[in-house]
Image 1 (cartoon, rainbow, N blue to C red):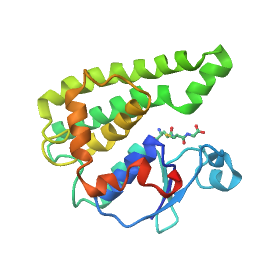
Image 2: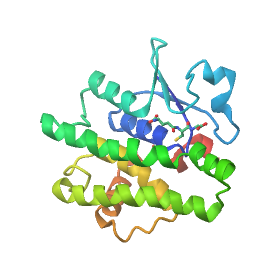
Image 3: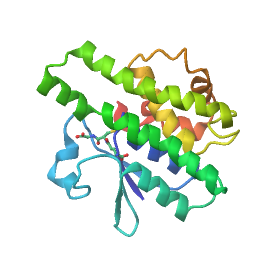
Image 4: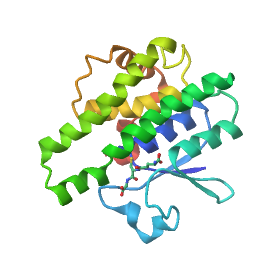
Length: 211
Ligand SMILES: N[C@@H](CCC(=O)N[C@@H](CS)C(=O)NCC(=O)O)C(=O)O
């Protein structure tokens, strides 16, 4: 499998985590969002939406959208499951992931921040305030939900899809100086995640394109 990735992309980070936690062999092809490589003709032939991540399977089939890719990996590599077996818990785990993937991340990605600047003249401070607002709204909900099921990780003491979505978003929050005092459980999970070598290997700083 070949993962098209960018070291700072939190959506690509989710898939790197799923691949590593499931111990699935893969290669990583960096696509530089800074250089605009995601809009090159070569990459658009891989993913016409011009986003990372994309996962090219050994068959040549390309999968896009991190949630869909992770669901595919869960279905085809059931060992080391990222979803619980109980359908209710699975629904809760998917809802937790969706708060991040659907309600926080799309409002804060680079093209939205660029649009705020270009269309409405938003400056650096305004863009940072915007960024913080959507993370804080989402994290308020997630911190409360975690009280029901967190252990060392988002669900108990084993990494799950909850961590696969939460950790990259926490990296983004820290990078944009979101005050984290209100989120002790999210921060505890962040530190526990970073004790696992397979998780550390998926972090932005460990990617070849970070240098
Ligand atoms: N919903 C998509 C989001 C993917 C996404 O927003 N990727 C960003 C990086 S995190 C991207 O490729 N941006 C490039 C661009 O906007 O040109 C997913 O979960 O895969």
